[in-house]
Image (cartoon, rainbow, N blue to C red):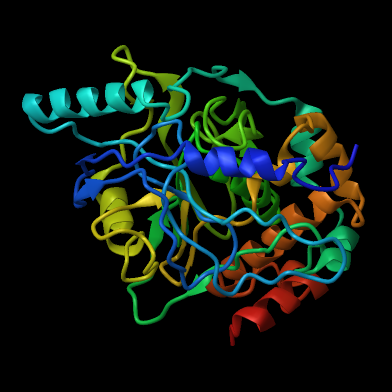
Length: 371
């Protein structure tokens, strides 16, 4: 069943805005202080904002729109774009922990919105659903191109002059790398995973994807998605690494989501360098945000589209609709996947040719001005 819009009333949107409260704490490695206040400045990229790097269950700060296209037809949701908060890598001193807890209590008492709540744990994704997402017909990719009626699509940011990101494949071969940094509770990550899985499946195969949904107390609650926490991916063209830094399970203190996959030093260095104000100016200084996707240190992706598009639709319905290029949910997922596919083609030598020269991918490459 197609979802023809976000289904959110203006009152709902205003309520989400009112739920936001600033909450400061020590940042992740390589970062400074984190903050839950909404950022109103724009990024270089268009589309919805993403969360900052600390979980909180309230509308987070993040990136704003700039170049996201709104196409003819149904208007895009008017809610400002943003990112979800990511969690602390370290808590700092005991005194700072006390301060954070006191602030959170004050926020709750003064009506700062709902607290954190644990969601569903990992469960294997349905083989039928995985097949639908990983085998989107080539005709649908070409028919959709980079256009969607119900949401602006946030294209990757093209950068230059950086050392290529590469990883060693299981056969010992050095291949271009794609790195995903996200969190299970994050609704903006939830939306991006649909497109990323569809795009990567044009180059290789996923195994052991898990069902997941975003936090029930964040904006766009319970957004249906997947998790990379136990997944593996094989491809002759690239290596994919997915880091689900935070789960959607609240810690014992009830102050944050639990750390699920601690980044390696190399992964943290990528996040610190590229998921920063140097490339995304609307991020607060010394802060990171979810989601963050690095395509070979040549293209960077944040939030892809407004997650509210996926509200009130089941995972099975979204997946089965991917055969229909007129389905509005299919359009946002596939348009995003075409951009991501073009990004992968730009780092792997334009392989396989049938994918990289397809109509939808060449439209995305042209929009990105990839030579």
